[in-house]
Length: 581
Image (cartoon, rainbow, N blue to C red; front, side, top):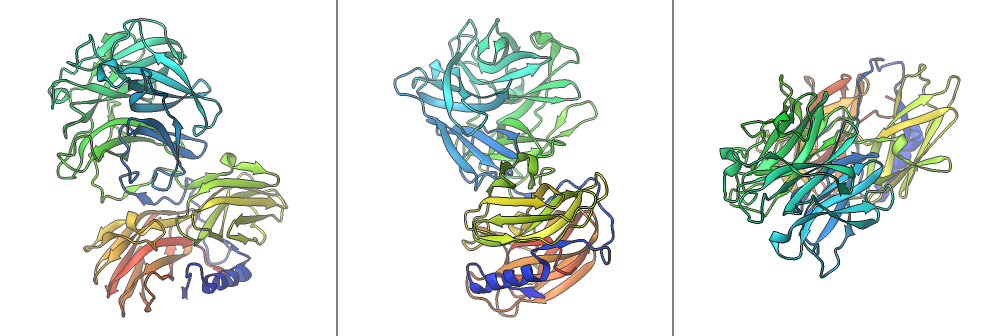
């Protein structure tokens, strides 16, 4: 069966109305035809993403996850402090705001470097380095948020310095055993010979209260690459199982040799005793010419949305001679070695499809804004007007006959009655909703004993999949993210790994196709099952949906979309339950 969804046309609206009439805009697993096999560990629809995380330069990225959003700040041209906000690690469509401009004519008016956003003892703070135009005068400073909104207003709180008041950059706070410490990169004296790693105690998040302690000099060969000066900088803090690591960058940041190393505090050690820290002799993340990754460094760490994983976000370039140009944020999941060291794996090329962080794309009700009887989920991204499936996570009170209604500024979905759930169990159901160009707010209202726990939009972008048989990413202004997978000849395809569903059963795979050649055929396959569809001629820029039903197990699967004749562009695939299924 094929369903047309032509953007902005009567055909789209008519199709949507027919679907809403047929299934009330809402579809549940029935006891017939859908095995009651639920993935108890289900943490979202999965999917993949690709580096880089933004289309603009984002050097020295500092990323945190808070309240259902990722926030990033970075060296924004050295002139101001910008914060970006996104529901996922993809910051291309993120909300962006300059939260602070320095006044002119001060010691901190120029060369703003490496802002670090942190939530310390109930306050949002941004620590940054700045000078008066002379690099020798770089010192650390702090901003404090006026509210609990990382995108809100910030006030300048002054310099963060120890008694020596020497050159300092890349500072941040470490909290350990209820005590605060400041960690930074600095000069020993007043000459730019080497940048060392220092630590000092703090009496509060804005005040250093004791002498600085030297933890590390750049004395290893890899740290000296590209120098002098020799470099230890870009420090960040990583914890696991009671152990603490300072992950830092070494070698010249202006060279392709920039890499990431680590210091580890012994268990029970005192952070202010240099002998309680050990330096690892080799970098944990280094350039990889084969992968096309140069100068990986200056990282931060952020949790996955469900808190089960840790991710490193770092910058790198794609050219050996890029220097300080083209530094863009990238991400990788943190693993761990048998002896408790972080393992970042090899740097991935830009074409690598990376499994998304666990829980990414799940919009939790606890993070939504209450508005009367509705929950408001803000910053739902939709670069074009589109119809999306919505997967609802819910619980039902005993004896309830609940409903969940959804709306956006472009449409509504009134639901049928929800299936009951066992005590404490989570139920799942699909709806379909129209989103406007530019996205915006999605509103949900539960009634009749239903409790909405979360919702998600199980859409899988083809350009984020694994390209097969010469397929390639192709920019397209009509595509949902401005890009699609170009399958330019028979045999070319795209593999969508890490497709997750909460229950085993028969699912509809709805594939968005653009600009097919006459006579094109598209094969959709998963788990050995295959469906080949004839693709009809379309107007240029017209998007049509082609659908096939496939059995998918609970947990992760891979779906492949392959051109069997002609050429075409695949925009995305939606995975959902069809009406009456």
